[in-house]
Image (cartoon, rainbow, N blue to C red):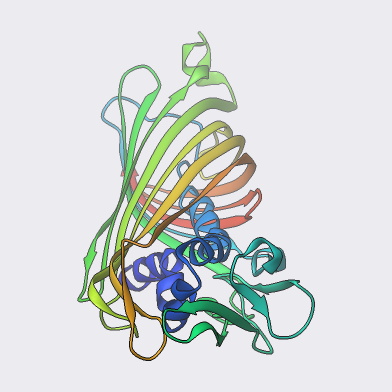
Amino acid sequence: MKKISLFMLLCIAAISAKAQNDLDALLAAGKEDAQHFANDYLAPGTNGLMYSMNANWFNTADAKPLGGFEISVIANAATIGSENKSFLMDTDTYNNVTFVQGPSAQMVSSALGENNPDVVVEVTYDDPIFGQQTEQITLPNGIGSSSVDLLPTAFIQGAVGLIKGTELKARFVPKIKTDDVSLNMYGVGLQHEFTKWLPADKLLPVAISGLVAYTHLDGSYDLTNSSNVDGENQRLETSVNTWLFQLVASTKLPVINFYGGIGYIKGKSESDLLGTYRVSNGVVTSEDIVDPFSVSSKVSGARGTLGTKLKLGFFRLNAEYHLSKFNAFSVGINFGFR
């Protein structure tokens, strides 16, 4: 659980971990250019994370009765398509950045990809003594290599039955805190079974319900040990908020059941590069840049879900697959009583 949780934060902090060596030159080109690159570079990682965070909120449409409960350990993974491993960088839209070779618009690595071979850009800045100067930098790769195809998340989740077909759910990641990383994630959901209102609901072979769920993540990455830029209190702070609206249907068999649904995900990620960065402007001068920039990304879209659940007394196993902009699969180990 801890390793997956750390990977989740590294996904949203990839710009700090991988691009930090080039931050000096990017900021020298201007905060606007640095922010432009960071936003395009980071967005595929945070977007994929938001889809991964919303898997396995349910494993049946059949709501638990009053007092029924279930405790689950869940592992999810969103798949990374080739289209998410790179983005089109058009230096005509930058102020002080150009490619050393090739056209002004080229595909470069996102936070989920790899530049092979390396991509080199030239940054132009004004030195108060020597005038206009240039510096060449190598653009950063992503969090892994071209063979990394999954964005994992993991949770502990609980569900309890309330009145007349209503079920309350909650999920969380135990707080992770190391010298460099702090992570906190939680979510809450409400599922209601519509078929519970029918007179013969116990005789129906299927159940139909609706689900609304909210998930929040706060992460902080201390840049002190990875930064090559002088300064103080350097860190990246990220906040992620998502909503899931889902219609669910499932069979009601004694041992093996099947479930599926159609849903809609909406979410936003915001990352703030904070602290003081002392950027060199030539040999003898420097400039302090405080809280350089913020970047954000949004997701919204439909998804389809197919899953199956095996029930053996109080022990259950489930597996599911989601079709969406970032496809995802999930498995859960569940313990509980109806």
